[in-house]
Length: 428
Image 1 (cartoon, rainbow, N blue to C red):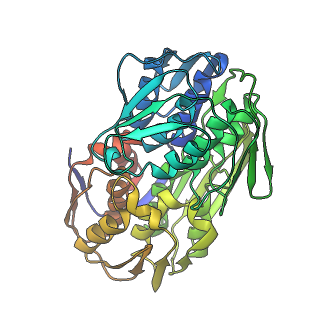
Image 2 (tube, rainbow, N blue to C red; image 1 turned 180 degrees about the vertical axis):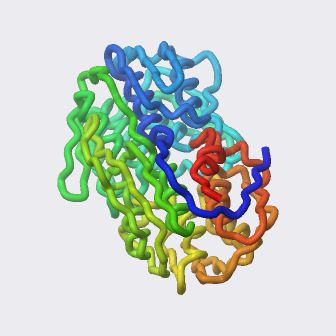
C-alpha cells in the first residue's frame, strides 16, 4: 500500500487514537498468567498486539477477541503449556523480549522467531541478565538474535543495574522475577515506562520502588481483573505534531494515556513553543489519562537529550519531522537506541526528510535538524517501519506539492486507519 499526502490547510476537530500498544501487550501477557478472567477494553488490534495474542494461544490460553474488547481466560502463574510449534512474534520486539522473561521460568522449552526485522534486533541485553538469573537462552545465529530457544529453568533473584535504560529489558527481568527464588532488584540509569509495574500491582503482585531501583518479590498468584486501555500517546504524537505545524489549527485528542514516563513528547513540544493543554485528567486502572488540546504554534529549535530520551524514544521520528518547521536548530542526542528499532531511525528519518529538502545531520546517537527550510513533496520510503511512515506523513502536510510514501501497510502494526484519521481533520 502506498499513501499520497497533499499539503493541508488547517486541521480541526476531535479524535481518539487506538489503545496504548505497551499496555495492550502487557494486558494479554499478565492476564494469561493471572488466575481467572481479565476483560480488556480499548485493546489495540494492531499486528504487533495480535502477535502477542497468537503466542499465548499457542501456550494454551483461551483468548476471545471481539473488536477492541478482549477476554483472557488466565490459568495462573504456572498455567502455561508447552507449545506444539514455534512461537512467531511477527514484528513485535515487545512480545519477544517480555515473553523471554516469562518463558525462562516455565517447565518446558520454547522456540521463538519473528520477521526479518526482528531477526536483526539484539537480544543479548535481555538474554544476558536473564542468564544471571539462571535462564538458558540460545540463538541459532552467531549474534544473540532470533530465532531463539528458551529452555525453562528454576530462576533466582539478582541485583542488576541496567547499562542502558530500557523498559523492555526491565520488564523482562520483572516478569522473570515473579517466578524467581528470592527478591529481584533492578536499577535504572533513567526512569523508563512503568506500565509493567503498575499493571502487576493492580493484579496483586508485590512490586515497589526504592529510588531508582525496582524491587520484585516472587508472586504466589496474580488475579485477573478488568483493564481499560487508554489511547496511545505515541499514536497521539502524530496529531499533536500535525496540529502544531499547521496554521490556524485546533485538535482535541481524547482519552490518551499520560503516564509521566511517556509524556516526554509533550515536554519537548512545549519547550519548542507548542501550545498544548491537558484537560479532563483522571486515573484509570492505575494509569493517568487525559484529553490533549493542541493549537497551531510557532516552534523553535531546542536541545533534546539526557533523562527525557527514554520518555520519548518512540516519538523522536515525529519530533524530527516537526523540527523541520521550527525556527533554528534542533539537536537530538543520547538516542543511540534509535539505530536498533524496526529500522535505523536516525538514518531513515535523515534520508526521507532529506528527500523532501530538509537538512538533517546524523550523529552517532541522534541528529541535528536545521529548521525553517521549505520542504517539497517527494517519493519517500517507509522501510517497513510504521513510525517512519507516519512521521513522514506529518512532514508532508506542510510541504509544497504532494508526497508519496511507499509500502505503508506497516502502519497497521500500531495504528490501523492512520491515514484516514489524519485526513478526517483537514479543512482545506
